[in-house]
Image (cartoon, rainbow, N blue to C red; front, side):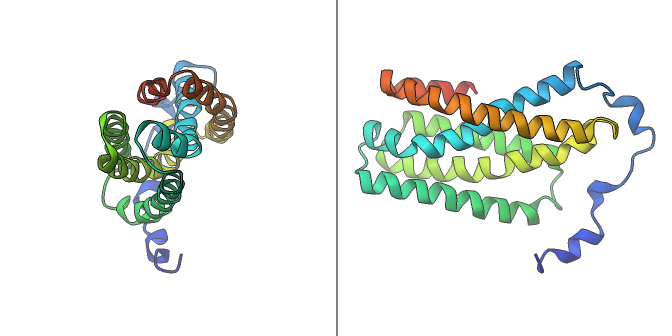
Length: 193
């Protein structure tokens, strides 16, 4: 925190834009807010679900030993922590929306690599996915105040956080059932989400 304190004073992302209320949605039950809530409903289960089922996926479909597969879960969460910390330095240099696009592409590339790769590339895929997913949730949450009016921004933050929790508690067990039925279905489900 001490290393980043100097960036708090000159945060270019908090400057007011004239006429911002006229172009931003004012009602929470309009299309843009509902789509935003759905994105959070889908994003959190990918991040949480992948970490929960990663050991099973790697040991049953990629030939990892149980010990190594469990170690990859530690690698996954370590990369998430490193990615979130590192993103704090990157976000001041790259526009938030561009960075969201980049990390979404990175996560998709990592999921595709994990789906179609063998043993060694699966390790790289886990690192790519976790580094990409690490910034997605905070970046999208940070974007809320820019995308919606001051009137509904607080409600949107709450609704998006609630959608993340609902998605994590409902979709993650569904993925477990997919794995039990056919482990390859989990890759398809993750890529679609």
